[in-house]
Image 1 (cartoon, rainbow, N blue to C red):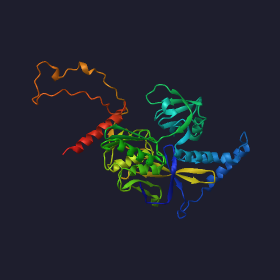
Image 2: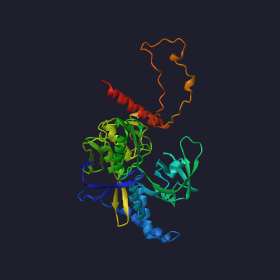
Image 3: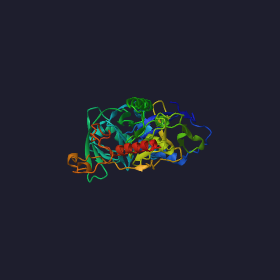
Image 4: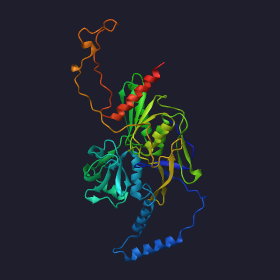
Amino acid sequence: MKRRFDSARALILGLIPGVLLILATGVSAEEPKAPLPMQELRAFAEIFGRIKESYVEPVDDKALLESAIRGMLAGLDPHSSYLNEEEFDDLQAGTSGEFGGLGIEVGQEDGFVKVISPIDDTPAQRAGVKAGDLIIRLDEKPIKGMSLEEAVNLMRGKPGTKVVLTIAREGEEKPLRITVVRDIIKVASVKGRMLEEGFAYVRLSHFQSRTTEDMLKKISELKAESKVGIKGLVLDLRNNPGGILNGAVSVSDAFLTDGIVVYTQGRDEESRLDFNAAPDDVLDGAPMVVLVNGGSASASEIVAGALQDHRRAIIMGSQTFGKGSVQTIIPVSQTAAVKLTTARYFTPSGRSIQGEGIKPDIVLSDAKLTRNETDDAIRIKEADLAGHLENGNGKSEPEEQSDQPGPDVGDDYQLSEALNLLKGIAIFNNWD
């Protein structure tokens, strides 16, 4: 599937949890530079010298300057940071779908680590970690006062080792202690199945380099599996924390035939980047429902916003996370780089999602389905009454109860409602 990009001034690179990234290919020399704040720089040099001279222990120059850079970037926003060689390697490894850890996407809030989303089929999800949890202790170490990088490093470790997360969760009176066993995290970003004949379900847990290719393959398999093709699709982006920008664009493009998918805009009006859809739709216009929640962030919000603005899909669930900024990776040496927030991204209609999120067309709470176990044998119908009046259409054999399984939705209330909506649209479209 082809995608048209209206600017070549930047190269899309990859992801860090919940963050869209662009690798800078050059800085414009035409923009006038502000004069250096010499007084403040003199103060910095003075403090640096005092630390070197008077601190209780010797301090390495490189470590001291790196700490200063980290502090400077951390003061800007939660997503700007300094990347040393190891951290930059980890950033690139994130796009491959295999990395070590607990399997959670995290950010920082009020000095604590906030879980944006647990990744599907990972130790954290299996242990019961949920989106929105605040991690306040790692083993016995308080999180307050740590940088996000320090907390993430503490959560990493050898596969098979344990870490105890002390979690503050909304609705719980006391903090929870959850033990998670570290493992190699292998993320399968695309899963899918038929819910009923003609109605398909595809879940995207992440946006990686192969996500679009794997999604198109899965949809092709589901088409072949169904005798009537795909009459409707549920695209599940719940607890999907994002990933690479071109993955989000190409997934949206798979269902759109024209127009802008997303655009980014920084301080400079000329820095705008437009990403447009190519003229093809893998579903040939079949209706779609997109499921989202508070764990849907970044690239997920791009897809939901694009499909909502183009009226290509109905968005269902709860309001999304609201991560609408773009980070640029700026190399500063052979082994280090700066991740700097340089732009916001906007939906096709010009909405900024930053701090706002995508508001669903249909709001649904996160509930579970329970089956009514009432025995049909004790229910009495009109036809069971002695001497009941015939219906006038002649005698007919009583209908046998179908032994076909019901919709493949488990106890997922939101998925069940999405399927019901698709079935209603299909019935309406078949009316003359």
